[in-house]
Length: 306
Ligand code: SF4
Image 1 (cartoon, rainbow, N blue to C red):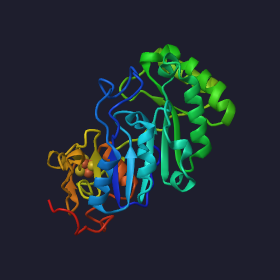
Image 2: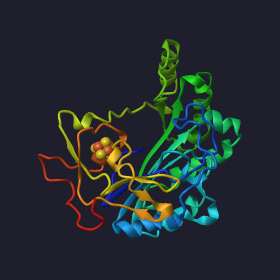
Image 3: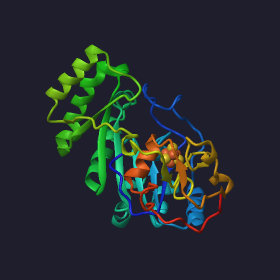
Image 4: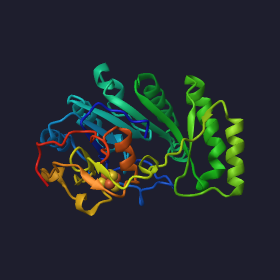
């Protein structure tokens, strides 16, 4: 996800979609999510009514955000009627109602993470749709934007073809460079390392090299953090499940939006294992508290005690 910033009090990492149109060999979700339930507008509105605070939704995770609902539902448009900000992680095959959003709603889309999954785009013959959607995002988006493509050892025979496609289409039209993102689950062999380096050199005008996050780095040397998980930070899944934190058993079940249940903590959680992507995002957003400093946010008195 892009370098995240928000002015919201509550942050939600939300896997809203139960479907993806693509079938990437390297997808971190096994199997790729297909035709599972997705969140609908009323589920999210229940959450907003319950927490009653300005909320930042980071839509990422399982399916593709726009593949999770039909355009006629106007999920994004109606969500942006609320006091929210959003970040979108998309594969670019569908944009649903995004191009028609009013300017004040576009301004609430703080970050977009657009990925080119070249083999799938080619095999499913959706090159034109991807190019058009990528150009629409580049033209309309005002906030942080990462435009990347995955380099997986499983598909190294297509690395150069994918870069040439990007160069001749979106780069030729916009001059926007693409990030080269290594498959996070599979290391390259020596020949692939050599090919990767040579492509970075030959396509230097088109490619921006990968940025790598170290999720535990901000917490080095600390015994514990005071985490807002379950109070001002949540994970919400496409089937409605709500978690404060997926890594801590006591915070892993805080309700279900489809059953209209939400149990919210009223104090920070003292955590001695801050090393996951959630922890990093919370820190990056300025929401993590520390015992040797004033907590990032005051303890809330509203919401159900836990
Ligand atoms: S693992 Fe990370 S997100 Fe979960 S409670 Fe600990 S610090 Fe918070």
